[in-house]
Image (cartoon, rainbow over all chains, first blue to last red; front, top):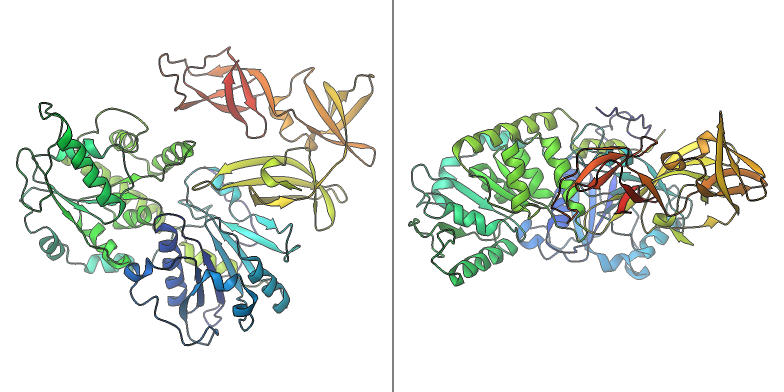
Length: 405
Length: 184
């Protein structure tokens, strides 16, 4: 087992409750909504911890459904004294005029590989007496190198902040990493959740013995195989909007164009009604906010998730899940998936399901029988317990951000 | 200027106005197309060591130093001795050998790097060919190379190789990343 390296930054005393910092968090939307989802979740948790936050985003439109109310105009861009999150356009940080009246924050976060606008950095260098706590928030991975890279300094070698130092912060699944975002009352919320009522409201036609399965994915190669497996079952698939719904419609169209002589070909028909021997029941869900997404995960018997934020939420939900990992052009995601399944201590059938689901191996998906799901749930809940014993991401980030001395 | 992923063990970079020799680099793929490079450095002025990390495309100044083509001769603890074509010998401290130790074999070629007239490190060629001294049995059929298995070379350095690679095979290894390139 890797030993946690001594790192003077990470070993600082816990922050004082009375000291509120000012955070500038930068996020670029590349594709999908995951990066913004994580940054919004972080900003919200910082606010709840008494911090003042400015979230700079190039495309904040997804917050309209992900976090209703987040885009309400703020009366002022000044920091003020109360905890808050203000969403600001990235473009305002690239030009001297909007920056003129802004006071740079105490903590700068560049999320997921984005570069801070040079105008903002230059403004900070001119107006701050000391360097901020400048943090590069990296992507999530279970690969072993994450522990070796986490916490290391990164000298700024060019530009207006030449001579300053950033620190690389890696979210992760082990004590030697930066941990995962987790609301303090998350498990209590789940315990108070009325699962039966949610299921009745969202899948009223679900028959006795049928399972409720959520689908939030990219375009998993295993989707056609899943539909074939569920055909004629009492299960009900809840399909989230966007790419998952497009993938579902494409899989159905492909199946309907295929020769019906093949018994392996699902002829699924889009209907919320109960399934027949040649169809399966599914529903297209509307857009929902982050709380709504959690409730869906809590309610379902199996969650098919994607990206980083929903993977973490699926872990906290403690239900069986399968991860559609973000595909990378050079197959770098294969090693990342294997590393995650290793950390998860996934049983063989779950590993095989993942590899077929993600197109790393060919062949049929393992059967989603009761024994398999029970096994996968036990695995998830054991992993969750390991995570709960570690400091969460917010706690570690607050510890990092405190000025020394 | 170079970018971080171009910096290799044996290079010297300027940090806070002082020269630091790069002892080891570790390139890691993050999400999407992002990558980071971890570097282990030693100060040429104070001998102090440190570890830092960069985004793979972070720019930095590399100091261009004198170099000489040499071959590895022998180990005289704690020095690794290299020889040029005129039979001049140059000693490099074990601590400064960095990644070169992973691929070391008698007679191997590399560039010895000099700072202020003193041999401070070695720069490897971008790839080397080495025999696989241990790996699990080869599996025929799948030549797609999608799945990797662990393998070792004579120094004990471990790399991932495709499942069709067998013990005794010679492979080309990228010394910048420590990754398998092809079977020779």
